[in-house]
Length: 575
Image (cartoon, rainbow, N blue to C red; front, side):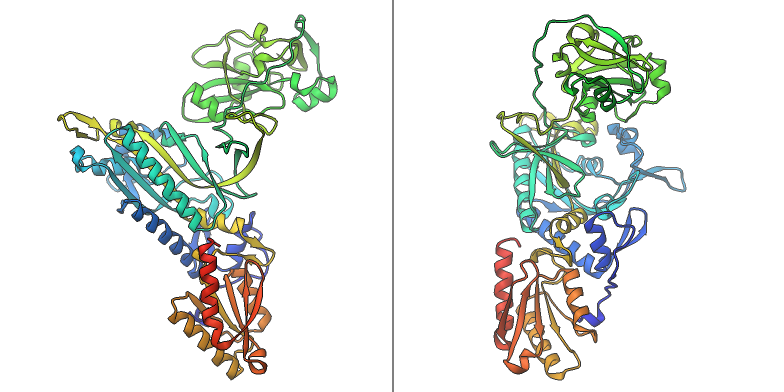
């Protein structure tokens, strides 16, 4: 490719709309352009990266025995209604109607469609197992699209689905795909962790997320270096903390003006934070759920939803709270209204081990002290409904845990028979009995993987691509393209690289050398070959590595061979 013909409108200044590094650098490097909120056009360089990631995914999926299909983006509402997810999925689903008032959605995922696709075709156990995948655009109406490709309304996703005769077969397929995912993300050069995860709206009994470690990540990951435990913070179940036993005192109401937060309560009353009991209230499908946790802990709303059930979780309104005898800022089970089908109270297990603590009195400006929840909280459901912290022990070995940020680039699910039973999809076993498929579901965010790679690999000058997914592997750059000798040498090396199978670009633009160097660093070509004045003096050119900054001088005759050697070394190290 000739740089003079490349459509790559780079930017010199940081775009104001970009909040994270990947978004900023993709815009600056001329890889994407915003079409609307959460919608992006991919320019040639960006498209090349996506295609290279897709090629890695295809290679590993095909190698794992998966077969590629292509399903429509527009899906009929009927199949979603069969599984009950038409209303459950929520406002993130793009819904539309045709001219005949038939309802459809833009596919956010394809469990329903793939199941209905095979239910008329896979009839016998002899046809199983089957593993099907596609590379497809997905659509989700994010309430607040942000961070460029990391949370957009349209994105490229690889989704795969396995069909087995029993749970053992499903687990085998799950492990097969789990291992394939590791190979995908290794090949893409990511620093990642597979972590235990909640299945969310997809459903199923167990799941792993593949998290690319990055400061810009929206997910908290819990890891233990002692035993290797790793989980999404919402999936990690912390052990209950047992407070020191004390002689119980009688609970009493006392004035706490201007103490509507735990911080205020601690500062004004001098109460140790571990003695405070915090209340957080949710509306879950119209049901008011009051959750009690220790003052220095945060509520795990996923655990709350799993315990209570329901689909849509939103903060409760002040009107809802007061209708059930709860005073915002001063809530607790004490003096609260009667519980029933529309009002439940949950208490974290750690809370139930507090002695003589402080909690709200459901009266503005007042709290109770000397509260012992095991004595004073009645008719509450006890469970682990808090998030783990770095002060907790590892749930597996009791060792020290760490919290890190991650970007979810893939997830695997063991679905069981959730969709096959709902959609009446099954097969005849060897005894002629009808049985539902055991299914698995596996997704990779292709465009999100692109963003994650940039979040991990960049510097002040631009992107540092791993060779496997770089838009071009090497750039050949004459310092002065008007110098006939420089231009001829550079073009010769470029053609040698092309002949050797290297994905190379020749920067033949009539630009200053500094502009070319800046663009090469911004775009992130792994290897740069610079043809300068030394080619006349010593017959040598400079080879520079983008990642390490290492430079070496080689003869013109050796240049192409040396670039190939460097690229091979980098590929072998997934760099």
